[in-house]
Image (tube, rainbow, N blue to C red; front, side):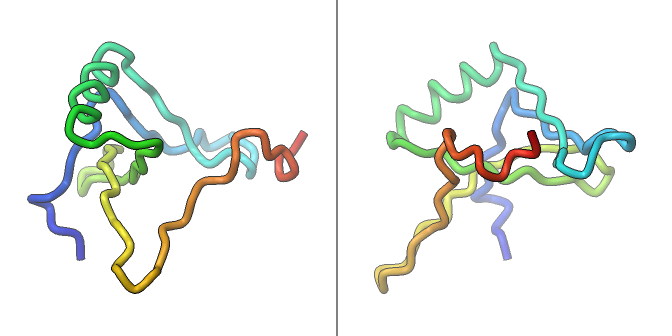
Length: 95
């Protein structure tokens, strides 16, 4: 189970459920408040340089969306974290 004291909230990143009339291929919505996210990202990258930032989009007990950094790392036994598909992979797009 996730340790809440280790959670890093992603400021300026607001996940929302998809609209009830959205087509099946729509997963949800995401709003980014640029000034907040820019400040968060600058501070985060000072201590966490790297090519990827994995973010978990969650729903609070009161139903509001929020985001936290997924800081899971594989064990020394060789397990690896799943990587997102390349941005230019268009094979599964519905159009």
